[in-house]
Length: 293
Ligand SMILES: Nc1nc2c(ncn2[C@@H]2O[C@H](COP(=O)(O)OP(=O)(O)OP(=O)(O)O)[C@@H](O)[C@H]2O)c(=O)[nH]1
Ligand SMILES: [Mg+2]
Image (cartoon, rainbow, N blue to C red; front, top):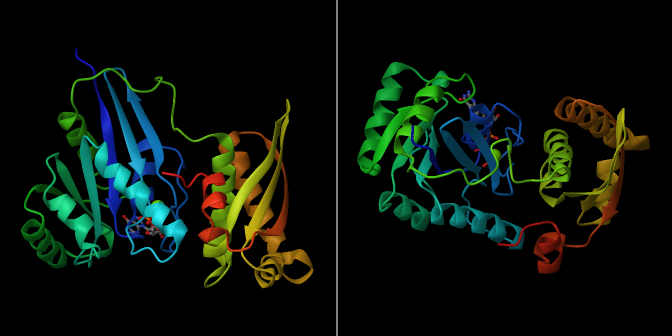
């Protein structure tokens, strides 16, 4: 049998469920998921391998109008995902009517490559609403095949995957067959900590945070990790730490639990908070954190 392989890139508005779908395809929690917009900041590969196929999925940040350099860079990842896709997965959620950025939307409707429009979160809708939505999107994106799905409950996910395989070109694998992602271990540590911060802090705080893992020491029975939580201002540092360190402690307890599951090993996690003034608008700092594209 001939081997198929290619790039399948997931794009769409913030919070529609892109990362949930990628994790469902891969069967691992590669991307963090929260109910807040702009959870994903990077382009993250999730590779699904079979004997005669390799699907290289890309999870991308939700499309927004950038207000500062970090967000510009996030939109750069989305742009790159248009450039190398063999199949585009354009995800919308029930109730949504438009992609806010017109230029991106035009790229989708004028796409020369196959577009699967995934109408997500149908577990939250009824038949009537679903039919109306399918009609709306069929008119807006006539070049797409529409799949109503629930990434969370796994509804129609297998069907979408089978269609992807149909559409992939014949090609040898791009990555070793035992590889699951392009990101190193430290990336997943940073993301796990950032997820807990998105979950437990309000308003602007999570958006002002970046994590850097300074030390990753794997011993026989334990992995020792030291990570810095960077904030933009002194006042944010106090908020992250909380009264007698209680807020930071909660982040540590929860992140450690997830990391133990991810690595299948005991974890010792040490964290401290540092001010890195206006890092979100500083090109050098952004490059250092992997936002160069
Ligand atoms: N009810 C329902 N909720 C879902 C479904 N898929 C995702 N969600 C929820 O929607 C929220 C956002 O999910 P994510 O996967 O983080 O969305 P995203 O598109 O990656 O978001 P950004 O990275 O911020 O652009 C989370 O609370 C998910 O649990 C679904 O099929 N049904
Ligand atoms: Mg995401």
